[in-house]
Image (cartoon, rainbow, N blue to C red; front, top):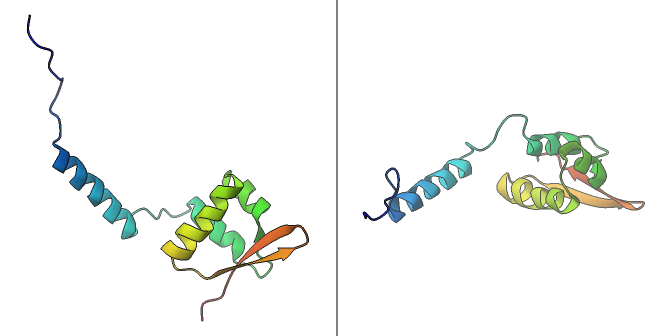
Length: 101
């Protein structure tokens, strides 16, 4: 009986790491920004002076509340460098995109 062999060539560990690193670098350069993405929808909703509530942003994206907040803090504030403010209006939190100075 012959030993079982893998079908097809396999990548070495270093090749896998370099491919993963290249993908991460491409996204950091902006290759991951797709026109009409959900992040762009969030930005467009926050652009008017009245802003957008967390409930509105959830319905626009189909995301849960914690995902919308994470996208605002991580991808938009830190990643894209946008200035976003939030205020409490009644029982809802409203997010607004600050005008560029």
